[in-house]
Image 1: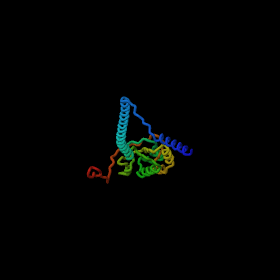
Image 2 (image 1 turned 135 degrees about the vertical axis):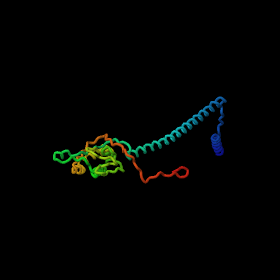
Image 3 (image 1 turned 60 degrees about the vertical axis):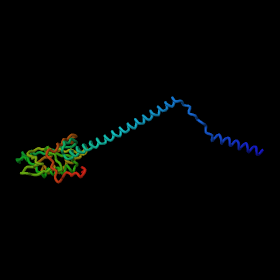
Image 4 (image 1 turned 180 degrees about the vertical axis):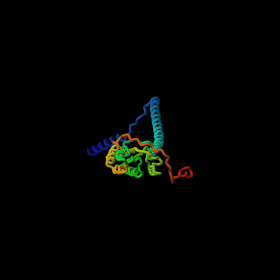
Length: 238
């Protein structure tokens, strides 16, 4: 009986193992027309993939073109910024204006009305404006830039060759924003420059901040010294 039971168990295990490792035969029952349809689907898929690749390549080419254009645009923007910073363009922005005029009350005292303003007064005024974050300044319609020279020539005060022959004159100042313009106005209201002008029989009047102060462009030619063009090396590179 033991041998019979063992034989049955072994036979059962062999049968299970045989069924497990036995691979069923799957036959391709598709006919030629079904095969044609499947082939057509694969070709359509391939065509779609090729079209997508072509589209992506066009996008990459467009991106490269935009990148080159953006470089040119960046150069143009940089050139415009340099023109603004060097004073070659008009500037409109928030700021204040200051009026310099004679103290007409002196007429009653029998003193002559002052029609001359010294270069030192203008320089001190400019220094004070710059100290209070003035960004762009013009005096009597003359743009003040880094190379501007204010001096006395034959008893006439000149700004880069422009003579200040009569008063009143106007000083226009543009700042970065209205907050700075308001702060500049408050400081100029109690400025020492006003006292210094009054000693020379001149009155310095400060206008309230304005959002659209216009500072004109520099009209004279800018002479660049001690600069030379870089010579190109072999191959055209500089």
